[in-house]
Length: 304
Image 1 (tube, helix red, strand yellow):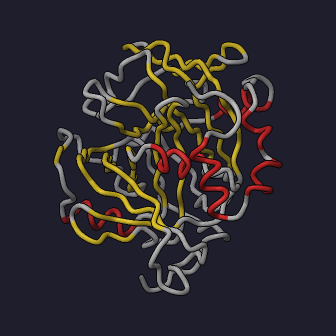
Image 2 (image 1 turned 180 degrees about the vertical axis):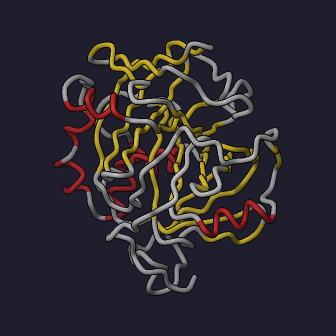
């Protein structure tokens, strides 16, 4: 269950990063949610979201959810109905109900996002129902500006390709990416979906099983890193917006605080996240965008 206030992992990372005071001032964001009002209007206009959850084998994934405006429907202050589910072949197509989930809805064009964490009460062919326990917005930093077309079918129509390591095409997609979605979880406080962005190349691939990215300064809540500090299970979703393809990665993550070069690559925060690939799924998506305007907050890339 998501609960309220910071859990021990978030507090530990905030202290290590030296931002406990800044985080405390934002603790009210984690109060009991109310999806009505501004959140309801924002969600109703969205055509893209991403869901963090476990499959039937208990492996963590993060998957895209798409639909026409209105496919995310607020039923009451804590109930979000999703009129749709992950596509056929997606690792979370038949996502089991009764588990903790995290959902993020992103407006790339206006650089806005809302996270909704809670319990998946219903999962079936008609869609999903999430009972929210946390709901809060995030800053616009590192969102690359795009106007999404979720009706295009530009990707391959072939079956999803599964694996346990990155192939050459996967490596190329990751190294060219300026955006990915991150799924994390906590054994008691539930799951979370978040957004990461930067200049193309900000995610470094070391080999077929290992990659890392710099942790850029954000809102100082450290929801994702706090989860990783307690439970290393993590999932990544990369989208090639031009080609209409996706890459799902499931594995483990660790926060790297030690032995970083000076200055630490890109961010100068002195921390990275290292990810170990355990399972992959590559497929197509209806999400498409031709043009992109880089975020003005993207740090310049430096040598690894």
